[in-house]
Amino acid sequence: MRQYNYVLLALDEDPGPGTGAAPWNDAEGRPMTVGAGVGAGADSPGGLLGRLATSRSGRDTGGVYLVIGVESATVVLVADGRHRTVARPKRKNVKHLELGAIFPAVAERLAAGPPLTDEEVRAAIATVPAGPPG
Image 1 (cartoon, one colour):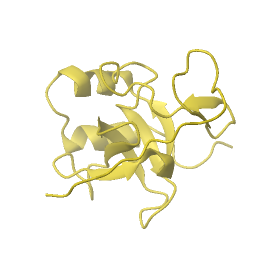
Image 2 (cartoon, helix red, strand yellow; image 1 turned 90 degrees about the horizontal axis):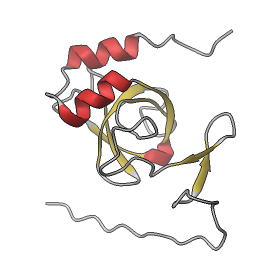
Image 3 (cartoon, helix red, strand yellow; image 1 turned 90 degrees about the vertical axis):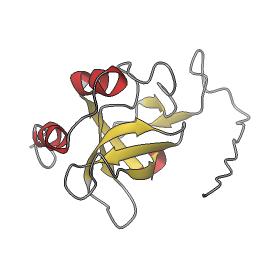
Image 4 (cartoon, one colour; image 1 turned 135 degrees about the horizontal axis):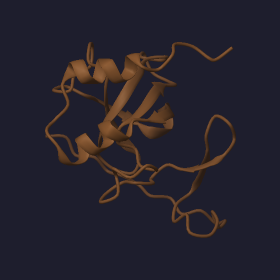
C-alpha cells in the first residue's frame, strides 16, 4: 500500500477575512479558495463535488471530467464515464485542473444518494457546450 506524505505550507500574508485558506484565482481572475467545501460541506455550492473540471497538465491535458470524490484539500477523484469510469476514477491534483460549472443535482447525489453511473457522468459532461463561447 502506498504511503503519501503531505506537506502544508503556511503563507506569510493574510489571504483575507473568512477565507481560511490560501487564495487562488480562477480563469477570470476572481479569488477562489481551493480547499473550499472539503469535508462536511463538500456538497455545498462552493464545494468541489459535482464540478466540471478540465485537465491543465499531464497526458490527459484538455480532458473534461466530473469531480466525483474529494481525497484531501489538494487531491480530487475525477471521472469522464468512458476512459475513467466511476469504478476507476483518476486521482488529480486540484492545481492541475481548471474548475468549471457545478451541477447541484449531481453534487447532492454524490454526497448522499446512490453512486452515479457512467451514463449519468457522460450525460452531465455532454450538457456543457464544447469549446469557448463565441
